[in-house]
Length: 70
Image (tube, rainbow, N blue to C red):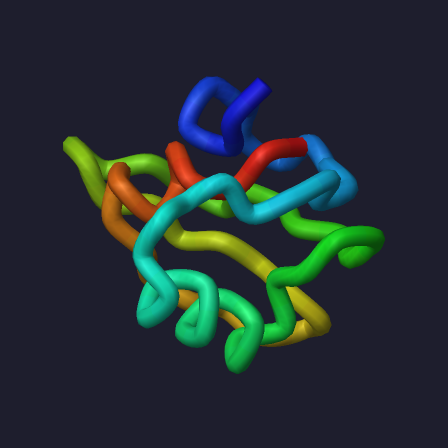
């Protein structure tokens, strides 16, 4: 399932980053979002997600959330 379908305050483990755009993969890897890493949705507001990755909070849009397979 994609992170976009996840529930708030539930920890998930990233299985893969599924996108054909290399720049999106690079951005997510630079945030620490890669296979085996834990990610938690803190909140959802419209199509924006606040996620916790490696004890840091980031704001990502729905397209990025759909690219993260958990």
